[in-house]
Image (cartoon, rainbow, N blue to C red):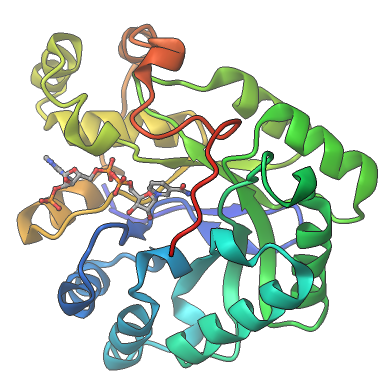
Length: 283
Ligand SMILES: NC(=O)c1ccc[n+]([C@@H]2O[C@H](COP(=O)([O-])OP(=O)(O)OC[C@H]3O[C@@H](n4cnc5c(N)ncnc54)[C@H](OP(=O)(O)O)[C@@H]3O)[C@@H](O)[C@H]2O)c1
C-alpha cells in the first residue's frame, strides 16, 4: 500500500496535507537539518511559529530541498505580544522576511489570550483577513480557540477560520471543540499529537500496537488521521521522523479506535496550558 499523505480541503478551497512536521522546541541550529530530513522522507507540510524562533531555518531548508515552493505547505503563527493590528502587520512581515517567502500557506493566531488586550482577539483576526485578501496568507486560522472564542468570531467577523489548532491526543480528546469545528467547517489540527511522548507507554496503546504490529506512536497518529484531524508530530530523531510518516499503510478497526478514545482524561489530560487562562507574552 502506498504511503501517500491525503490532501484535505479547507473551507476556503485550498488543500492541506493531513500529515506534517512540527518544529516546536527544535533549536534553530538543528531545525534546517530536521526539516531537510523530513522533506527527504516525504513530508510536505511544516508547522512553525514566530514563538519557536526557527522560521528562518525552516525557510532555508525548504529552499535547499530543491522542491518548488508550491509543493510545500508552510504554516506560521502570530506571536502573543503582537495582537494589536499594527503590531500584527509588522510581525507578519517579519515572518515572510525570516522565511524569505512571499506568502505562507496558513497563518494562525497562536493563542486567543482572552485575559489580554481587553479580551479583543477580533481586531487581530480581522487583520489576518487582510493578509488573506492581499494573498500573502493563502489560508488563515486560529489556534487554541475554545468554543466561546469561535462563537465570537462567527458573530463579529466575516471569514470563518480554516483551521483551529488545539491540543488533542488520547489523554485529551477535546471533543467539544472538535465538534464545534466539524459543525462549522473548521478543520481541527491536533497539536502534541502523541502528548510529547507521554501516551506511548500506556498499556492500552501498547496492546493495540502489538495487535497491529506497529509502534505506539504510529498507532496514535493513525487514530488521529482516522478521526479526520491534521497532525504534525515533532522529532529530531531520524528514525522517528520516518516512523511517524509510515501511517498510511494500515488501519485501526472500530474497537481499536474506541479503545484509544476511551483513554480521555478531560482537563487533567492536558500537557499544555488551558487557553482560557494562558496569558504568556514572550519578553
Ligand atoms: N499551537 C500550539 O499552541 C502548539 C503547541 C504545541 C505544539 N504545537 C505544534 O505541534 C507540534 C507537535 O507537538 P509537540 O512537538 O509538542 O509534541 P509531539 O509531537 O506530541 O511529541 C514530540 C516528542 O515526542 C518524541 N517523539 C516523536 N516521535 C516519536 C516516536 N515515534 N517515538 C517516540 N517518541 C517520539 C520527540 O522526541 P525526539 O524529538 O527526541 O525524537 C519529542 O520529545 C509542534 O512541533 C508544533 O508544531 C502547537
